[in-house]
Length: 318
Length: 278
Image (cartoon, rainbow over all chains, first blue to last red; front, side, top):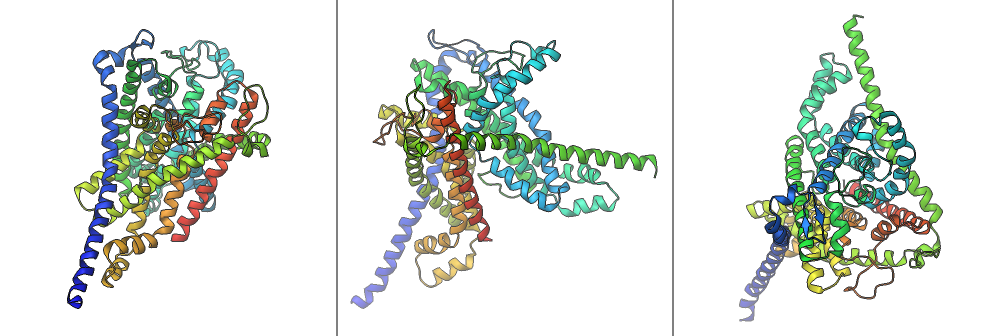
């Protein structure tokens, strides 16, 4: 009887092993979905006291007073949006230009050297950019750039006040430097995904190189480049360490780029470890929730746009 | 040559110059930063950096030995949590990935990858630091694991996709159970590419600062337990950079150099593995 039963027994054991294995990997894959849901749930739950207490006042209020228990996040929203948008405006033309240089102008050997270097630079931690920003760039801005701007352009509202070094301007510059590698390398991928036939067709019609770029390359890659830019915007808005180190951490709304400011991630970084009350913690959580919602919308938009050009997966690294 | 052609050529040359200029403008600040890290870091690095803990303010010298150890411990712990989830989750996506649930998992991973790391830190704080009544290395490691998982998941899945189906079928046809085929044939065939993903994810978390701010918190001294605050290199760079002491600034530069060397080594090794696969 042992001969009769042994085969089914092995089979059963096999099937059992497979069932366990399937169960385990299903649970692990599912845990990723669960992690995201828990993160969202926790952020909302912890924000509720502040949401209930302040409502819409939270977004428009400018008072941030932990002692009085009055919280409004407008100054941080302003700081985040202005620093990120200005950084994007400066970084986009440079990044797209550099990507075009790598794909279509530089000799292949040069491009093959520059592209990996730029990708490597995208991997440098933000705290190191911050270190350089606060110890090298901010003093340089304070001693050279800002006094010069005040002297020559001081009549403009953007360059008024004293040169502090740490300022909105410093944050914009450091963000620009940090997101350039990201936008450049994704734009490069998008440009490389443009079919060669499109370029050859333009050249065959007698186009110069720039005309080829303008008429064949850019129209085809436009939405992908836009995606890269929006992804850079998402990075810039969520960027914490480098900005916290150079923006001066002063809650105010000033037109002047020389004035210190404050962003949403920075206020969380500075205050969350030592909150004075439950309401204070909840208000910071709500700032985090706003940040989360904004970055989610931005990232989903960016991914759809990039995907529409490359039709492939840029993966979690992008 | 007609004036029209002349103008076209002029515009073409002008734009070429502008694009070269853009490339130079992109490389310049990055080159300057790199130069400063090398110069300041090399000038501040000494044997003490690897053996001593930070000295109190006012005393010169000291090092970041506790930060190096803390970073290593938390990265190892984060890998223990994050790698199984990322790698085996990817096995699931690769084997049973054509349903709504798998699409939802992939989408969640991409969303997770885009969440600012400071928010990951806040969630780890509410889930671990508050119930455990104190900042801890464990909470720091969990926050790092959450950042690691989506990177490992997506890169591993990409690599598993490239394993030929015939290889798996051959194994199954020989009567090897499905689970052994997955682990010993599919995963092992893709190991070079998977290693690349793992190394890149470790490189990424070794520089993360924001998620550690309210989890591991940092520590001026050695930490003996995982439920105590623990030092980490990026945290020390942050705290020392914003402090007003030259000695601490020197330590921060040395830390930055060490961190950059670690990151570049990990990235280049990852590239090497990634290349040998093709």
